[in-house]
Image (cartoon, rainbow, N blue to C red; front, side, top):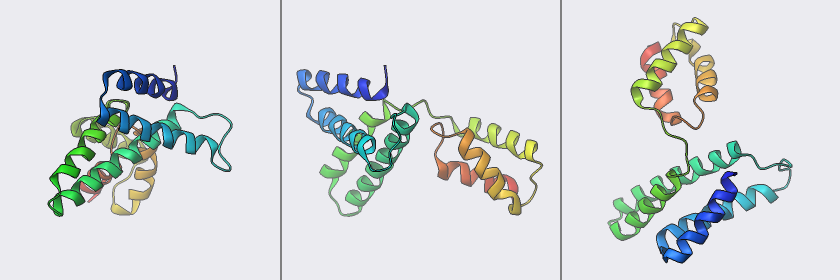
Length: 149
């Protein structure tokens, strides 16, 4: 079952359970999926990889919105964003711990022979491809900088 189908099934379950926050989050996800499917120049097939990239983008947006709402003392809106973010995260692959990310980056640095900050671009390129969907880009970048400096 594709991620698109899973989301559709979960929308039905949320409707039956009358879970408004979950329903709103899942409808937002489905809307983004449909827009990506029908976008001009979109690939014939809507893959789970593309769906996961969209989910990551949506989680990041929710996190940023929640921070802005907190700064403006709108904890009610921030809480809704956080709840929706948690619903979306359920459909993402398990994230690696910082320790696991560090191990992978050290392996990449060793494999590429990188030793200075000049090699950061090469290491980041490989790391972001290999760890796509499993680790946050900011975390990867911070660890690469720490190891190469």
